[in-house]
Length: 552
Ligand code: GLN
Image 1 (cartoon, rainbow, N blue to C red):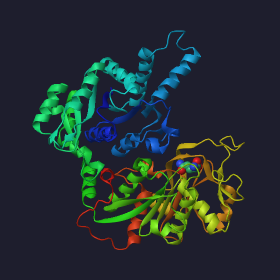
Image 2: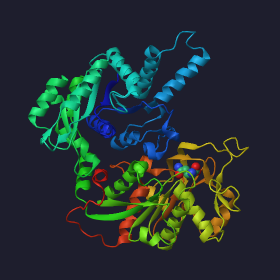
Image 3: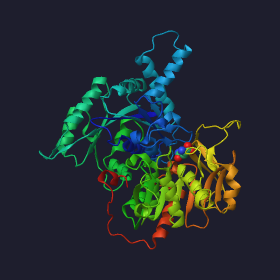
Image 4: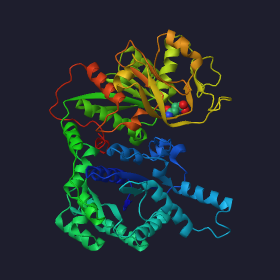
């Protein structure tokens, strides 16, 4: 029977509930349990698929093709075995869409449809579906206690704990303990108030996880315990992590959060085995080299817009025991005149995915620069499409080559909407989720993966246009892999280049710190080789703003 851990947040947003939830997953797996994760998002969008990355960061795609909140990426990265699905992310919009469909079908038999019980029942069912048959479901509620939108979810959680029984469900509340410089003390009042808010709704948090810049002194801990009604050892301090987000599980285990949870939910405290994780921490903390990789996109102002790409790059670095520094480059500002200034000195380049025309020429120029200067290059989805366009224009001499996403009337639509599954008319439905890719024997991808057949996640409408395939191949563009079911080009490469790989899929979604994705691993390795003998570093300089440094 599944045990449930709800993670709520108080005082303010962006405290890192996602990372905390993910860390709990890692620790419970370390105790030998199976875990599943879920995110409940109170906003009204049915899914994050159509939301701007500026608003909500990256859209994370699961194996089964659900477009979800980026926190799901943390959950999959931190755990070894949790495989998330469309049942792992519910928004208010998705809950209401289902209720309204039922109401229209007459399923409620003419009864008044209400928040309690209909919305709350729908939420409770969603939570059970998300759990599958895992030993634990770690269910994170987005937003902050006190938000109007979150109320039906909190009410559902309250009921859920009663339904399941106290031994089977618990609430961990993540809160903020600010440091006041004027009085030189940590203030617990905001946390007390957020717990009051929870109690008003009838939820008694079992564990308090306190984000803080400074160590929690014993008296603050005592106060939080007293006023928030939790035992002292259930007050967990979560300080900002020094070098990497992957240090968080270690911080939590040092305070016994795993034991607190297992005791509270009456599960045997098996031995905690974290060998792989500890080996990873060693590598993260002692890099022997560093490389700089440019990420050329249009959402670079917001770090979260390319969350999984950033992480996958860092993972590639962990494998090589190198610190990866990411130079964020705006594709809109990049052109033939600025390329040298903006890209000069980097050891590798990534052009990530994206939608729409803005910044597209800058991305194509970036590919040209990488190809001509022999700088290791990885193109992801739109980045691969740009690589094909660039090759068509500048190597084949088809000046007008383009994707029909950007120029409907181009004479050389090298990237185009493909016939839909029925094969009759041009589709335009997204290819979402996992698809197989057969790798060509002599391709770089085949060498990287060490496998003939792989499966990767997709999220795009446009495809490499097979009408131009033969001519491009004759012209030297190499097809590294294709989807066997539909003969779609999945990978393009340039053989006569240190590392030039464009993939129609999103490998970044499958990279984990303990299992870096082969393509990111190889990109970083190529970047190190490009750089020449890596300098041995004495100390690791931080080159990014403080909040981003925590990312590295
Ligand atoms: N806009 C392109 C398409 O729809 C690429 C999408 C992406 O990069 N995820 O095909």
